[in-house]
Length: 221
Length: 295
Image (tube, rainbow over all chains, first blue to last red; front, side):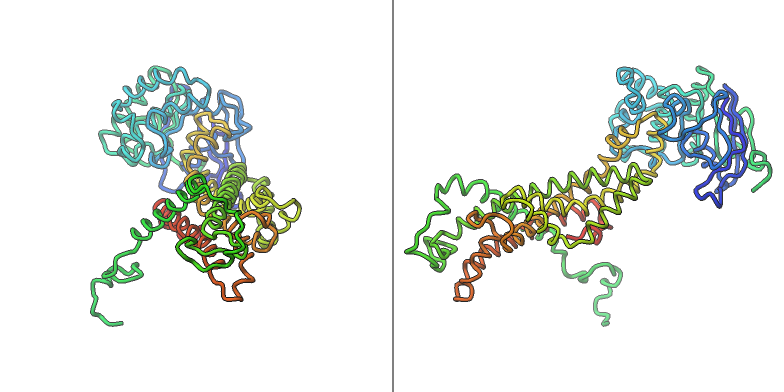
């Protein structure tokens, strides 16, 4: 269970972006979070991925409250949640080839020897050819880069996946392909999904249930 | 303003209208040639010439430039061309060592301050601000005065006053990189703080830091010359450009222009050439930041 309880978060304690938001994702469940632009969805997604410390409220991972955030959080907690961001250009280190980009979490967690096999497997799953794997981010399209970013999020086999507007920058066929990859991964591992977005049609089709921003925050704007 | 060149109006950012081409290529080529010449002279002349730069010939003292002494001779009859090359050698060595040390220290301090943030950042940057508020030359003189004259104290003095600007540049870069989503992705991928710094932050700031180091070479050479000119740098028997100018000061009033002019040119020309090359490189890697990394 990935559970956000009464989370208030933001970048200025006097004016929080997210007020009193509560949301739970059960294992194997896909939850879509819908909301208008600028309402704080991404901030909540960052809290759920342990990347932003909330001003108040708790995040529970399988009943364990998270006490430390970002690099101070225990590695098992951090890597239990995989994240895919909205803009692949900004979320990929421009100096790394796509192979290294995907393998980086394995190397960072000391599982270097698994890297070649896992990268080949994931590259095939997300539809990246060996030719593309040798290129750097500026040499591939946004869609191809987002495929690599999804592979990177899956490489450590996270128990939850947070997709923050993963498909907002992409065309319909890439969107369909990436959603299919996520669904395949979830079917194989039983991972939970928190998909954040503003596209009602996509999220209704993709997720088991969708939550509106007003419901999540209890009506407070 | 007359309207005889309507095409120039569309390109308002050009400092000289559309007819004059930018002198950039020429600048870069001239600078590269001069730097190459400097390096070759410094590396090849001493072993090939087999001449003693210290050879005193009192019969030929203060000779104006001639065929046998292209730069003339000084007040002890030593060949000025040879003295200048040896002086350039020492100045360049001090400049390179000081710039390298300053760049490494500055990068380490700046990256640590930027990456750790919080009170570490505030404390370190206040120290940097405090040291920057003291004039560099004054601080340099203070450091040199603590030691016996020599190459090492001068290099230490120049390095210890010049890592500050590199630290500022690197910290600013790191701060802007730290909030990018790719750092978030690395955190989420289980990377430790050290891994993020070594794998993602340092490679990203390396071009800026290297550029700061190269721009510091001419600055350090000037600093060395200034210290030597004040008699605080290298020991006076050692040919350094600052010492040569200092030694020639008295003969300038007697109408002997060559012992001042040639060492002076040896300071100015190589430093301008290095600065020219570094400037072109800077325009390539960060076209919008021309004003920030002033020499």
